[in-house]
Each structure stands twice: as C-alpha cells, then as structure tokens.
Amino acid sequence: MTLFEDALKNHPLALAGLGVVVLAAPSLFPSLRPQWAFAMKEGAKLLLEANGEAEADLIESLSEFAVQRLVQAVSAPPGTRDERIGHVLSKYKARARRRSNRWGGDAGKRESHYRAHLAQLRRKALWRQARDGSGRRDAWDEAIAQIDAA
Image (cartoon, rainbow, N blue to C red; front, side, top):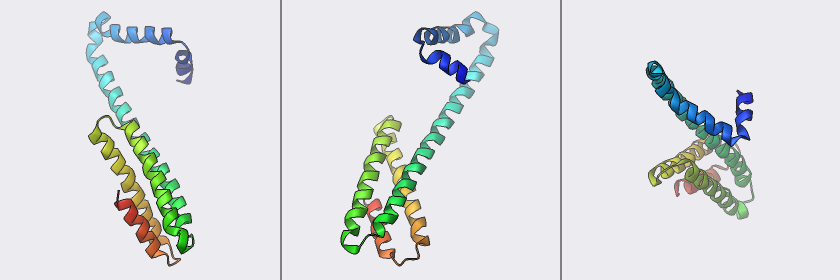
C-alpha cells in the first residue's frame, strides 16, 4: 500500500489517470456495476469510520495534555492558581475551537465538535479530581466550573 501511495504522491498526472480509470470502469464493464457500487459504499463507510476514530483520538490526546497541565496549575500556590487554570483552559479552548473549525463542515457541526472537546476535558478533569488526594478539591471545582462556563 505504501508503494502505491508513494507512486502517486509526486505524480499528479498518474493520480489523474487513475481517477479517470476509476470513473470509467463501470461504463466499460457494465456487469461489474453492482460490485462497484458495493465497493464504493463500503469504502465510504470505512472512510467515515476512520475519520471518526481519528477525531476521537485527537480529542483524547488534546484533553490528556490539558489535564496534565491542569494538574500543575491546580498544584500552584493559591495566589497564582486561578490565573494558571484560566491560562490552561483558554489555550485548550482556542485549540479545540481551531480543530472544530477544521473538522466541522457547517456551524452546527463545528459547535458539536467543540462541545465534544469540552465534554472530554470535563470527564478527564472529574476523573482526575476524584483521584487527587491532596485536598485541592476546591481548585478542581473551580477548574471544572471554568470548563462549564464555555
């Protein structure tokens, strides 16, 4: 598969030729149309599933990184804690908004993707708060309240 990908990567003419062959194949071989349609539908399903999994992995990695930074912010001295938590969350929200704009087509989809980012961060923060035995529950409550305020 990588050989095929590499062969087409730097040769747009070869890629265009392959596209013409793919579009012309059902016309040249009418008996293959049902199989061709089935293959196209299954390929589209696989593509959509792969995109969904890729998006979930990106959300997971972004939220995991943000929670690690939140742990550091929650551990900060009380005078700077709120500022650090706000900084971590503002950076997360900005990155989540950029990713949502990239993944979503219309405004509704973009907002849905953004909300998925925030929901994942909230779940991870709640999980981390439940396992934090250092007595900083109030700081975690503040962080989660700032996540919810979006």
